[in-house]
Length: 269
Image (cartoon, rainbow, N blue to C red; front, side, top):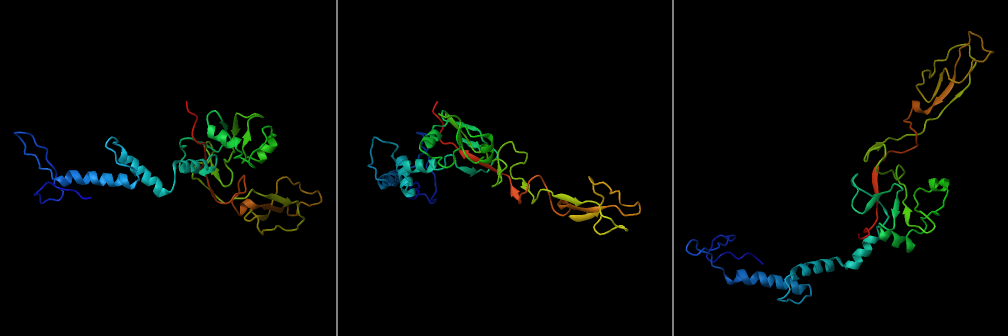
């Protein structure tokens, strides 16, 4: 459908003017300006499989929604089931602000009274293979931080997995590293030494700890009594940190990425 301008206008987008008796000459309205919009709307209603009705003034919006759903080949129930597939599934997130109906993957308790769809999922076996016993030992919990755990024999909720600071290098609120921070390639430092060696002359070699293996004075070793005062004192040391980045963990390059869990629709108050 195209716009129908006032009769006799040379401007295809000319506006209509509302007349005021005795003051303003109103614009004549051609029949097409009234007829065409109605036919366009009725055609959309009919295309959606609805029957045009003079008593219903919301048929156009219903027709649009129906055509969208049919075009997506998704019914409301299809969409509902698709949404529930993401319940309690770890998801990367774009922000450090939680979206609605979600939590950080930080091990907190999810109560069934607040999140009935989580309870439905639990009762239906939706956590199969990913559940610890409610009375698991602290050692077992620490060794399985990616699993869910009921809070009692007859649970009223589940403790969520704790993904924080684990690979895939996930981010949750409260970590010392900020979301998006880069972590360099590191290994944990390795040190060692080979006692004191008898030598009649000083060794220059890699003294000064310029490489992982070096000659120098070592802490924690005593000068053997058999050595004379003229002998050069020293030993072979090893320090990986002289050659590579080291830190408290063995890690590849990584990014601290926010990770969340969708909990479904909350309980109605």
